[in-house]
Image 1 (tube, rainbow, N blue to C red):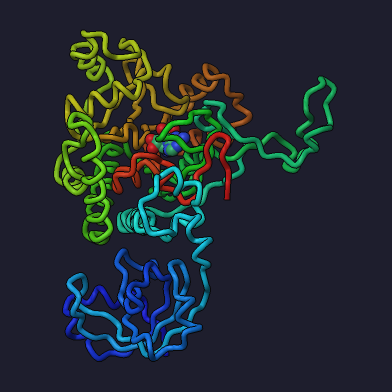
Image 2 (cartoon, rainbow, N blue to C red):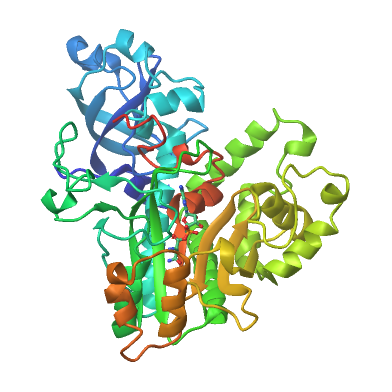
Length: 483
Ligand code: 4AD
């Protein structure tokens, strides 16, 4: 008999239609109650299906192995359930234990059915896929990735794979992981006494990519509209709930486009994804929404979210993002109560890199909506951003989300060769390292723009999870690369 996936059974809106059908299901036992009711989950959806057994009819040797955490295969007939929690259940005719789970060992793990802290769940990240919470988060993460590919495909973008090993540091922050096969203890040195990277695998100093943008630009300047979707690596030593050393970034790049086209694209893309998840993952979103409401009850009133998770998602899909310049933002912050009452930890003045407290004020207090900030001072942004006519600012763009802060960073790119060369000099980037990038500005250079969307920050927003380590299966953070 062919196996049926549990979600295929439970998605039927009219369970009456299924009654009498014979099915074979396979999954993990969540609970076995009263020697009669087995709750089984196979990961395909949040809900479990109940299989009912008549204890006397089955071999005791088999039954004693049906314990929480074990894997079973069950054949039976779908019948109407008299229980109040489900409309149908399976009347079991045959049951096999595929994999046992010793109850004593299960006791020591998060498989034990009770509430566990997120920290403990993280320590047992290899098992947390079996919990309702992480089942929901990772099904939604999958659907977000799918929605992203769908959005760009439907809008005429080509998916480009940019290199993971690269010689460039696109963001120029120097937070790179070096890739080398040289002997770490005794590397060959050159005449100056430095490590001789000519001897290394690639014959040069290379690192894991911090962004696929520079290569995506090359592709956009031929294919028109492209996007990357890949892992990025940053050796920034920030142990926060919003930073990972390995995260996934989506980077669209469009030719013949300016910063305004870029803002329109970001807003339309983010709205589409939130709407897609509301429409296609509602059971999981509802579960996370209700979980958050329960969690919030433990918090003082003034620290609770003003809107529920579902309302926050709807708010993003239904309202325009607020668009302002950096200069306007600074003015708002200077006039703000926390600034006047010296409540901000960091100073506010034109030229500063906005701190998380400033971004949160703008999004959560001033506008109470997603905000797109543009035209930042050139000194605090990367070399590739297009110089504005005021010669002080660049056509940069950050999108700030409630509870998350920066979710997107992007810009219109400098397409004028002379200015770009000048920027390379100012940022101490040797032109010979980026000859290929500069070359595109010599042959039919056009205005173009793009952005980087951090997948994990978006998954945080959509699931309401507050620690980035809980939205990626195996987080990589300073001093942590388990699994
Ligand atoms: O603002 P960032 O650094 O922009 C770039 O890398 C550009 N090259 C993008 C482009 O224009 N194509 O990063 C973009 C986004 C951030 O807004 C954030 O969502 C995410 O990437 N991000 C991180 N996510 C998790 N952990 C980190 N350490 C992150 N650093 C950036």
